[in-house]
Image (cartoon, chains in turn brown, cyan):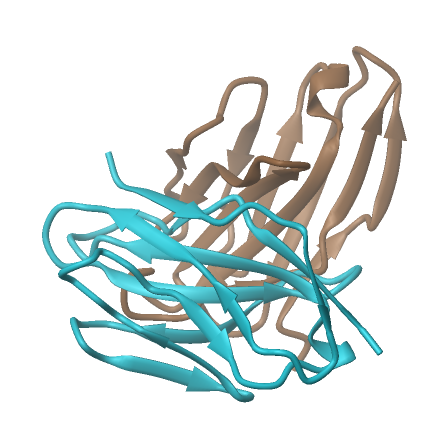
Length: 114
Length: 113
């Protein structure tokens, strides 16, 4: 039981390049989330999904796109990376509403945009 | 909108000292409250939670009591260890539906031997 895994662990991009971060969970959870963590800012929600085929915007969605084609996977895309997107990205999942169920987090992806 | 305010860190304590990390919240209705912990180089993990007023969440020697009258959920531990060094996040969920968690900015704790 791997829980929540993220690929890759580290990545360096040049401004304007694109990339996709992959999140996978093996707990059959309905809800999945993408956060970014920046010094002094805590965790900020980028996008989330309440089930396969659904996505919704969070607090800071600009510059990112997401897809949830399979229940176990949640992809975060950067179409044209900018230095402001340098951050640590965390994926999380939960079985139902966040108010009653624990969110399980992946180990994070450290992204640097030059 | 809903929000969570935590005391700013970093907090540095000696081993076996008493720990308090303050957390207050603003929310309509009756939210659930959480403390998550992030150890160095790892993702967050749930430490404890409370879902209604006057509930006390506890785990690994940490405790927090849901105080509706003061809109607070302060984290406490009677005797910290070096292994407790981490970043602690207070969070809330409004329980109304699909709204995800709202996190505080985190408080870094360093415990020295």
